[in-house]
Image 1 (cartoon, one colour):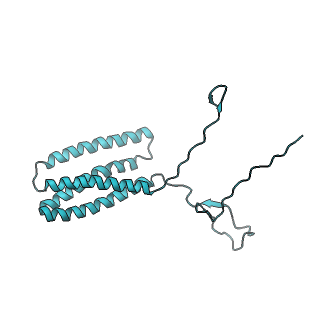
Image 2 (image 1 turned 120 degrees about the horizontal axis):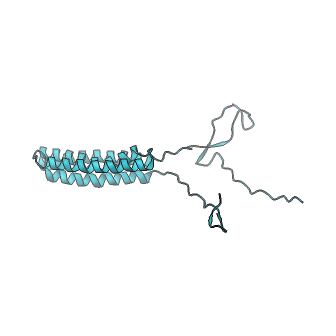
Image 3 (image 1 turned 90 degrees about the vertical axis):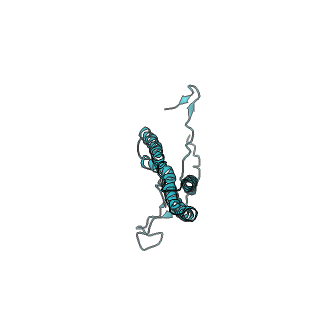
Length: 192
């Protein structure tokens, strides 16, 4: 004896939903036109997972430019030409220090995990070494205002980190939460 069970109803997403859009019309007729494909299509089927990081670098660079302009004006008002140099050096050192890490992560995103980690760690070590060398070299010179540079470096660190955080949080990247695989109760292992 054959028993017929009703199939569960399947929800079909219409072209009016936000995440779907119909294919462009291929014919000139209506829904009965055989040349028209009425299959819904995702508007953005391939979301770039690096977009939040790209936005972080972009917003960080914008924030750094704004800070450099404000720092140069304030440095000139408070310390003259040495204040201008201090603001420019502070923006370059502080902002470059933070943006370098985000850029190295962005460049290593397509590498294998171990290689990408090595690139980011190596970049961080090089960044630290360069920062020490630059600060040691600059300590011998007096053409810039050290207080202005210190304030702009601190401001660059805070502003660029905040701008990068905003850039990451502003963008949405879909993620998938996989369903748990069935476990064989007799063996306590996944069925294969």
